[in-house]
Length: 284
Ligand code: FE2
Image (cartoon, helix red, strand yellow):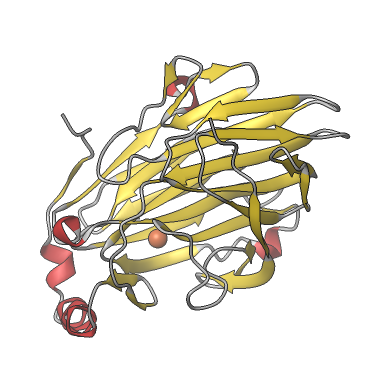
């Protein structure tokens, strides 16, 4: 049994996206700053409406999955097929953009706190051009055990609403009281990291410190151990690496430059708008 140790810290840096939403980006903040199969992690957190009101007006995606997890506030999404959905505190939207979706993500509040995350998870070449699909997962459908919310993958006998598939993702939200420790089994070979969004935590047998609002990339192993002297809240993410070439142009993530050019051409010619969008189903 091998414990995962801290390999690298990626501090989050202030960034802006959509129509000017202020956020903090760790993974994805620079080209190549990824952790296969993860492409990007944004944290948005503000009590000031000016930081988030502009939202994310209509924009396309192709070639990967976006996962939005709300902690506080209320966001509405709409897509090019007229589908609409609301995300409130604790809710998740798991969207497989695959060959194309155009959607908007707009705050439904004019005051108060808006806090949450958006994760970009890559898709393998053979799935990048499948029809888009997504699933809105209300907080009530996310199992919780010993202060851990299991959004994807498995923890202590609980299976999250998303599990399996080509990247077999794990997405846990962990709350640690002062002095408390957390241990989880993560499949060996999965790329894994933690993101500490409140307090500070220490990982591995070496108790290596992961600062506040930073991603801690982990070495391989089957066991994760996290402790926190003063208490912490953190995300634990793991997924099976794809080991494929990545060519990214903004919201398009493909394997080759030609595929990116095709994505731009398809978007400009309006082909994204006619794409079908389905309900995300789990692999058998
Ligand atoms: Fe989006």
